Length: 93
Ligand SMILES: [Zn+2]
Image 1 (cartoon, rainbow, N blue to C red):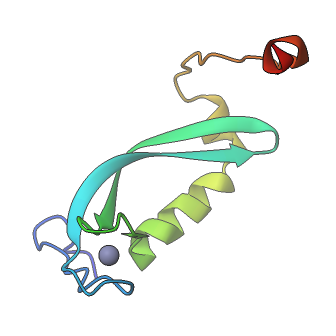
Image 2: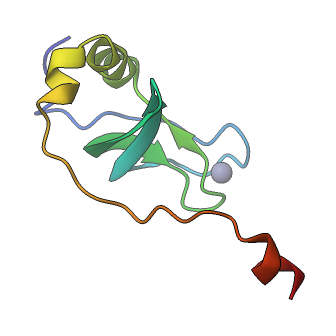
Image 3: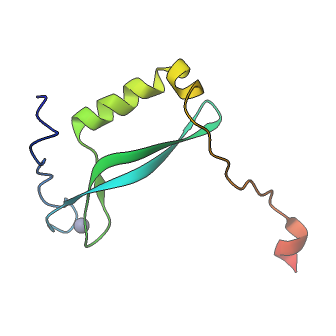
């Protein structure tokens, strides 16, 4: 199937609460070989009621392929994220 761009995928109903799923584009983060990777604009089905998420098989395959492509990951644009070390003194205060 290559018509996913033109035909809206039907995610069906939520397995948990039977609410019809809606497609959203999300940023999905992964840890991969000790590095945090963010994949933007990933189409997923989201339940508006309980927040359950489902990923289409073709999207899942694309993500799995991406994770097997270190060159593509290494050449992707970088963002910096806050990295904060746990502070036991603050926690005990
Ligand atoms: Zn639900």
